[in-house]
Length: 467
Image (cartoon, rainbow, N blue to C red; front, side, top):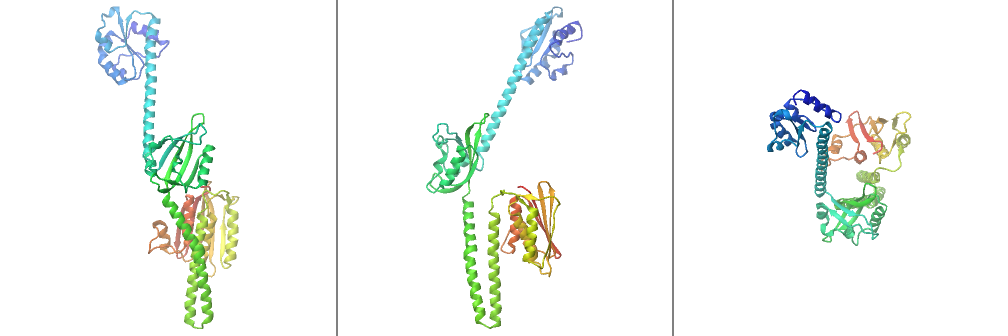
């Protein structure tokens, strides 16, 4: 409204209930407001802007009110209502004006609340669609089962994704049936009992279990189950994740067999070779024969060493991670220094440890890895008095850095390069100890590096104290 007594009266009447702004600037219609009140003269000037502003606000209600005074000389037409939501004839009582404007503003507030809910609902629907799509396209089998409310021991399926059907051969036709239809004659009863116990106790569980596909084929399933709780904390469903680990299981069994062959069969055969070699040495005085027998002895000892190294690798890396009981690395390193010096009296082993720090850690195999590094430094040093320095420091409260430095001849390049590029038929590491250290550090999620030259080697291990 233009400045004048009418505008002052209207602003005064509404000012005790609303924040009122007065203007004749058409661009103000582009700003944020909850109700626009104007007189007939301004209406004729801004009608086009009103329609555009209403369209921009849609679907949210934005009220426009036309004040028609007796001396304005204007009157409303049918088309007026295409632009406004109320027409108030002036003069009007202050209370009536406030009430009519308040009703329109309340309609707007209700419209805003409804629009917000609709947006939230639309966002929720989009979110659910995204999650459902993610579950359908996940590279692991996903199933959801209802909680057993009738004490039957069954948890009937209500959802399976596409990967579940690809993995098992079963789909929506099994909804309403407990997932144990995947079990068969060779399924381990202990694995079944572990699952049942966890479900009864409403806690997550993960097992390796032998299951059967629809076509009867067996497969090893890495099954993880977790309870789903409502807002009150009550378990309503269980979600399951299935992964085919058959290849991994076959590989594990193959390694078990190879380990048994190395630890038993190979050792027995090497003992026989060593025994018969000694008998031959006693029965001949031929110098050339003695030389040949010495080569056989060294080769047998080398093979025995490889078998022992493989066993050591298996013992160290087969421990589950994380380990249970923490160890105090400071005390273990002091003991380890004494053991290495006892085995190699000509060697000198020094320790550099931070003061007043027990260096507590749960890294699986860390002490074995450090011992391997120390022994390698001594065994592969042809000098008369090998020197090894072990230093430990905290890079942060959560991380430990261990360095094993020696003054030996250095490690051949091909043995360090295979750590990054892998073994080949032409490039391989003769020292399994390097792989042991590498795998211990990798299992802990740390970093392993080797700096080697003709003047010596520094092996560096950086690991989280508690992976």
